[in-house]
Image (cartoon, rainbow, N blue to C red; front, side, top):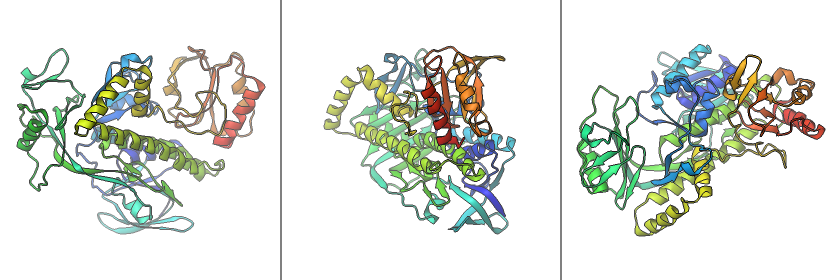
Length: 515
């Protein structure tokens, strides 16, 4: 059997990539070794830039279970268990979508089925070879078979078979000092402050939800996720090894060591699945390459972080959106030079930023009086608006900037397009509603629609680029050209762009879309 793209892995990143390819007119095949979607509790939500991205594919309301666009967290957040006062910022980049990973998978499976995609559950890749195409050997529930595909994408996790079979190294750092324990529990209703939602620990004091606490003996967090029992977690260093099954008694003892106080807790209500786990050590690794010939890696197959599943999930979904349209352009035969290679450059940059974030936070929550001195200094720095902005942007991924090859361009070029509302003949529309087809988009808010006129006259532009003329609510941006992943390749703030600006628009369209 021949197909254009085989995606290995039916988790969030693999399913998101399959949906992106489908929107671009490509029909990939998804292979997942598990017999059905996993219900194992993993990441607990999406954070930052990726929340905007799922909104721009029409998935936010499905995932959130509520109507309306995403709203920023404008009060507080945490960096290494230190408070980030987001009220210091004019616009917070911290957007949080609390939703368990298994629900994200459910929604993406539903979307994939709507798009007519095939997902083969219980099919495991056991061989990969490349020539002018990729040969993939697969073991299914009833048979072994072979596929020929133009491209293979590994979205099969930290222990990626695709990565290993393709000979791509996975260098990084293994941390063996930490032990993280997590459990879904019930706590006495009298322990919860009805006004703040804080958990009162007798002998220690209040612990606000979703705000990790650090002591000289470790870390503690309390997360009452909507629709689920509260999740409590501890982090300790240099714990003795054990092979005993994790238990609530072990969770209670760990909390006592960390906080110096006992927290009354019991098993959670309901049938679950519930978290009750112990993780010893961890890895922070980034693949040597995100692609090798016709094989590409996304998500945990390309990068993992000792801080847990959340950062990897956020980055993995954005890997998928970055790679999808580029791979589709290659398959359709109209890619501009270097387009597919830019996946490696851009997403490795984002992964390295997250490595810095994860390692810095790990260092700042470690035990020790010297770390305490460093935290005291950071606490002072966190009273500075610019410091808070920089850390908030780092956490959210809003600091990611791609080189679009246009020196001295508009400040938005290379950055994720901000949300905006525009007025069209059919009413007011958000930018997120204009991007759901995953096509390049020119949004022209100029007085004379000169950007749209300039681009519609360019050879082939209409075949690839969606052109919308409208009136905007802001004068900061009057025209903007977006890639399908919502990153800006050209922008203007002129009511009537100059001839030089319009020439730059045509060059940017040709550089990224071959138009």
